[in-house]
Length: 129
Image 1 (cartoon, rainbow, N blue to C red):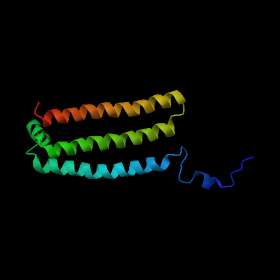
Image 2: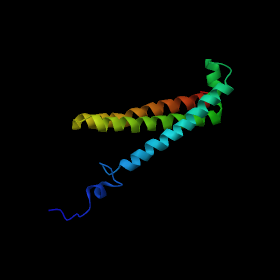
Image 3: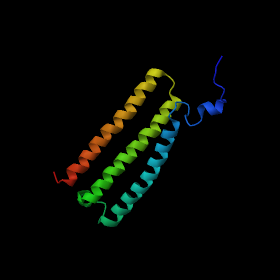
Image 4: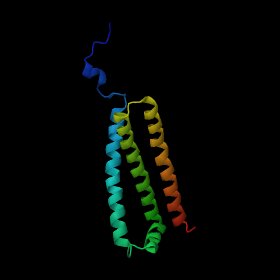
């Protein structure tokens, strides 16, 4: 017999099913708001400062340090937000333990590889290599 006298709601409050639900929820919402601001800045900044949709105009845009930092922030926030969302889908809908573990591992590694490549490309363009 359990000595815990709290109600079922009291036992799970502030913990979620895996004792980490609140942090995940907040992370998802904060990254969505950050993504809204950074993506809006990127679209408006690119539309207003680029002469046209040409390769050279894009290179000139990324070559400016402020724009390069903003683009790197956009890449990082977007991939973090994607990782949180895809992790939620895997946790909710994949029930086989090995498949879940493999997909969660891929869900961490693939965004890291994409981020590394994208940030490397932005830095190459920015430093004129």
